Length: 388
Ligand code: ADP
Ligand code: MG
Image 1 (cartoon, rainbow, N blue to C red):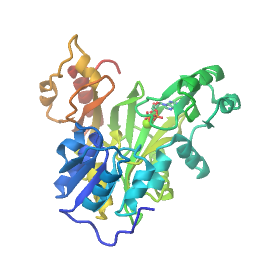
Image 2: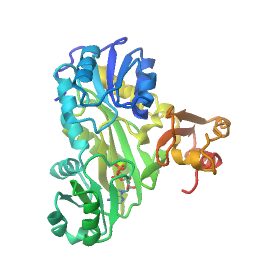
Image 3: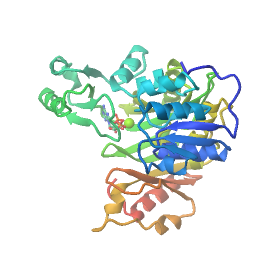
């Protein structure tokens, strides 16, 4: 599935390719650099966070044949930080160099109908849903799906491309607003809380799972991750087992994130991300190997690193809204956060802040979760994040 099998590991100072230039790609570049690799990034945005620090930024569309040929000629292997890379791009590259994860796995995770069908067909627990490709599909949808959430099948993220629909009429109106694009209609579950499991899987099928994160969202965007999740130990074991089995079924090589809902004490898989995940940022500061180091290792055929956490941690996202907190657009006062010794600040180097845009994050590490959480929430308030 992943192009030609890799017989010997790709060792530094080889050059690796990264599709996508966002913050996840930027952390991959940093991790690869730490290990002595070079990285070329393909991203159409001239100012992409990863492109800025890459050894080379190919500023071109993901479908650009010349850029893909250049990437294949210059890189020993390629991975992605962005699930919406066209599967055809991955397949084209796989004819020449190892591509991890493979196109087949990415194309399941990048399309909600494929993703839900994969969960259903393989017996993984998931909420009730219907595939919506026409108005008739809404007419015929089970009444039990309402109130529900209509989500576009492709290109949704951070709660974008989804709307809560109380009844069939609202679903029809929303479907029209989405211009008849393919969607899934999901039953709206009552959530006790949400968790995620990020894991790495290598070409031999060995898996290293990170500790579970408990994720709190605001307006559909991740706000805070608390690690380890304050969850029942059995439930966490089950979640890890499910995540592992999903990775196996996908013949996955690389870093995979699985988001779960816990509803009335039961686990439901929400969605998968074929890449490192926002809820795994904490691994940078609290684990022996970060999710990005594991991505490099899995891509290169190196043994996976230890994924154990050496500290408890609480991660807080810094969204662009913060730049608009006073009357005038202004840079937040980072000295407030710099003054907290156990707080690790990460800013992504994005030139302009916009509401909802992920500009950075911080992680508070410590020995006691209650204390780390209190420090993180106080820091969140001190820097000016409202609500929550
Ligand atoms: P995204 O791709 O934007 O992360 P998700 O499907 O994960 O989209 O939805 C974002 C958030 O919206 C979830 O983390 C959860 O808080 C809420 N949500 C999504 N689907 C449901 C559902 N079926 N029932 C209840 N809450 C949901
Ligand atoms: Mg999600």
